[in-house]
Image 1: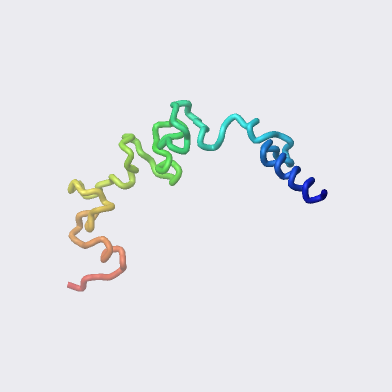
Image 2: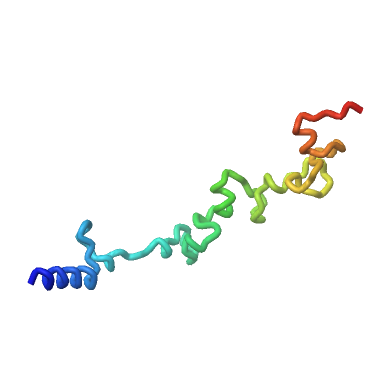
Length: 112
């Protein structure tokens, strides 16, 4: 009899989706995490590149970067110190002084 009672309890518990801790059914919740749409643009936050609608792509803003021209590339990655048309992040001599940056930044000197 005890085995049948336990089985019946478990069956009712799982079939009715009752959460014993909050005393609400799982169907009482109106949305799931994937349904949240903070900016109301019809795209769930989980799939939205700009979930809060501020015009800055979330991964850029979340990492403390800026994107003033809203092109999806952080401004810090587009900086071109020497004006040679190559962004500093890709330029081996970003300041155009003729010395490769990793050498200039390593503390090594050229005696000549």
